[in-house]
Image (tube, rainbow, N blue to C red; front, side, top):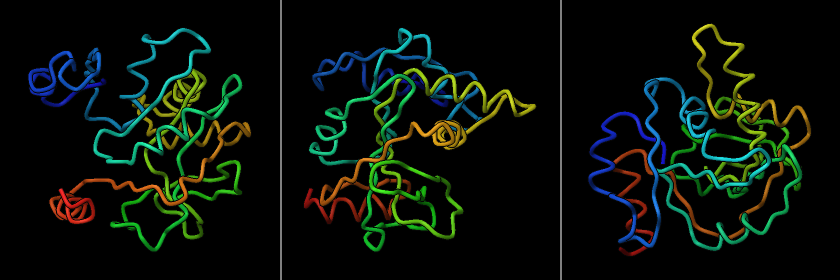
Amino acid sequence: MVTGYKHEVMAQRLGDGGRYGLGLRYFFNPDWHKKNGVSVYAARHCFSVGEQFLLMMSDHLFAPEMLAKLTAVPLAAGEIALAVDRRISEIFDIDDAMKVVFDGTHVKQIGKTLQEYNGIDCGLFKCTTGLFDALAEAMADNPEQDAGLADGCRRVIASGKMKGIDIEAAYWIDIDTPEALAYAISKLHL
């Protein structure tokens, strides 16, 4: 888990993850105030070249079948797979959503300000370490060494190596606000 702001609170509350059936390791990102690509890049030393891993946004809630579907996707060197929701009319906060252009197998564009799009980034990725190379390139292009995850994804897209996986009817939500949390609770009857 990459932490930054209030990292000590996260580590104290989650501990080693054992009570959740997980084994957690923490990686502190001193540049946590920068874009999320910098935080992802901070974890690069955890993986061997070519190793595959899952990347999840910590404020996204998703159905277990999404994870199962994504983990089953084969990846070649440098590829990334992104869970994509095509049910645009059902997105809770469409203005804040990361939009994608998806051709059914690959993501062709990604960005929050896309005017034409046919899917939404669910914040769940299966990655190879090629993502770190793409983020390093994106950060090198910025004088402040800052880049978002979408900046790295655009480089992977340009190489034709960003797969899109349609989540179909699986449930997920990005919980950024108290209203989104209330909506998620109402949908899940928690």
